[in-house]
Image (cartoon, rainbow, N blue to C red; front, side, top):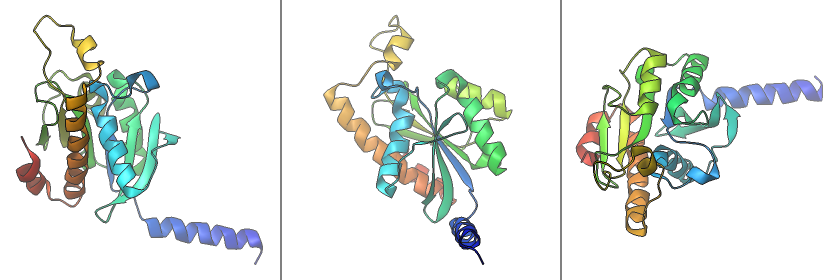
Length: 208
């Protein structure tokens, strides 16, 4: 047996021990340094918080996004941050679902929500996109709204006439930044429960 055969066998065993990806966990946002810390990137912040806790980096370019294969609560998952910009999030997510042959029910989406106060969480098993362009793209390209999502409150516009794009692409003040950091950690805990089939427990514990 050559050294190349040994290497192939080790690589094969390593891949097998990691197991099949069962869930895609997608945080929504916009790529680029200029969008870091903006309200619309709350989903990215949750993925980063979970990855940091697991000692991983979400930096492998795949499926039109940044990815990492991880184990969450004993379940193999793909962490995904689409780099398609918010309005085309579904393009990245559909590629990942199709590659791993994962049903849409095993997709967990994390996104911002302007109807919730900063730091508040709301978990839903399914539902319409509610006007959120990232969710709209996912619903249109998967042909389904039957996937769970975790909504992260980023606060309402200061007044009804305030430009929505300007609001969601704006950054948090110091007080709200602290709330968002705590909510990202709570959302990561939600994900751990949800991939184990404990969505009701997550909803009872964290829903605002």
